[in-house]
Length: 68
Image (cartoon, rainbow, N blue to C red; front, side):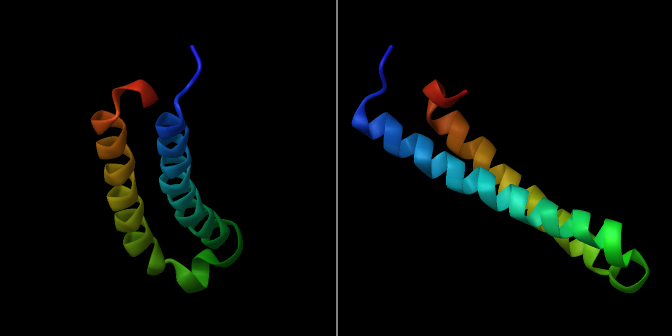
């Protein structure tokens, strides 16, 4: 089944939301790998940022059933 233009745009929008989650996770990963002893206090805030970003992803997917 081919996607409509609207569905393609929604897929692109979802990809942006997912990329945001991965960017935050990447920052967290870098801290764990490289600077945990100096920057550990940032992990809690980053974890909360991931939680919020994941809520956006999950709400978007729930709203657009075909993206599941």
